[in-house]
Amino acid sequence: MLDSKLKKNTVLGVKWSMLSSILVAVIQFIQILILSRIFSAFELGIVAVIQMIVGFTNIFLDVGISNAIVYKKNISFEQLSSVYWVNVFSGVFFTALLFVISPLISSFYDVLEINLYIKIVCFSFIILSTSRLYKFLFLKEVLLKTVAVSEIFSYLFGLILMSILIKLDYGIISFIYSIVGRAVVQSLYLIIYGRKIFIPSFKYNHKSLKSLFRYGAFNLGQNLTVYFTSQLDTLIIGKVLGLEILGVYNIAKNLAIKPLQLISPVVSKITFPLMSKFQDSKLDLKNIYLLSIKHLFSVIVVVYIIMAFLAKDLILTIYGDQWVDSVIIFRLLCLMYIVVSVGNPIGSLILASGKVNWGFYWNLSMLLVVSCLIFLSSQLGLIFIVVSLIFYHILSFIISFNLITKKIIPIRIIEIFLTIMIHLLMMILPILLLFYLSTFISNTYLRIFGLPIIGISSYILCMYFLDREYFYKTKKNII
Image 1 (cartoon, rainbow, N blue to C red):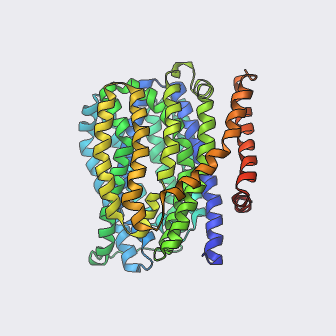
Image 2: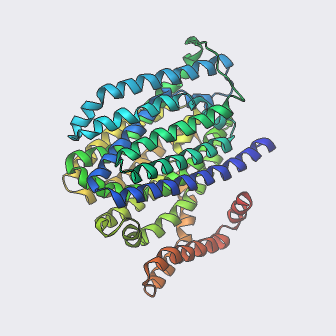
């Protein structure tokens, strides 16, 4: 299915993407650890709001057309140059827009400081807009090493900058400056290496982007609805239950979401360009789709079950006794993200098949459902919100499979069920061992470091006996 060059780039891309994801996750973990040890739940609530705004605005920086570059098999120099200037213009526009509306956002949360923080952080969007095209050019050709290195260097610089500024008593604004610093480093790196393969002209041809804008408009709408859906919990909890409760929730969410943030981008960075190259073959699309679910779920399930088992040890050791209220939320979120991981690969399938309008309409409808669900469940408390979200993700996957997935590729839901069931069976022995050994191990650090090693080792052993072919293929690709 893959030629030798593409296969080589794919394997190398997986390794570099995994390395980048691991190091970035570690850096982000250290960052939130520092923040949680120094700042209050209220201040961490402010951090959550800023992160939500940054993530939301980043979606607009290319008005959705960068993914079209990866999707389109042939794209001209004139189109690439025009896309570059679209990115820059949109970066300037949304920076100015946020600068103007920051007082309104500050007023919404009734926190005056948010106004200043938004005005500082918005300059990162202009900076990132100058390098966004290069990132997607590297993704299109599955040249992920450069993207990975840019992420590693930028996040490391951001952590160092934040740590220095905190030491100098800059407070929460240290986190804001670290976001801007990270954008500068990443953009410089991508521009330096990107200009070796493409230098944009000073010409802009709107007509040449007609097909890209159609794809991009639905892609932008899809990304917006997906992001809003994922951040509605932060928005509503902060407003209805207060920033202090949001701080408690955000501590659990930041830690729980890390494995998914670590592994899912590695899979999507590979599967989207691969699916795009084989978009005319439904059989190849199906094979890549099922393999992406298998790769993602095989890692996610073992990590989250172990994390849920060690929830209290992790929360109290990492963040301190004052965050004990986050333990039950953390366990529930671990279960939720296991469910979410099964549905994640459909995003790449929709993009690669060109059915971005389907994705937009589906996610728009789900946005309305989740809005009502979270608002109503928030009246009953934080735990009820998370439980409601778990059932929502289960039902949304089943419905989206029947409405979207089956219409793109010839597949039955039993094939997905069998793909994940084999790995759930592999977890029976690790779970039994964890329960048994935990009764004899009382030392917290020995539990945190020892039990995962035992759990993962027994899981790999079960994989060897239950799915030997996959075991050897995975071993070969890693080594």
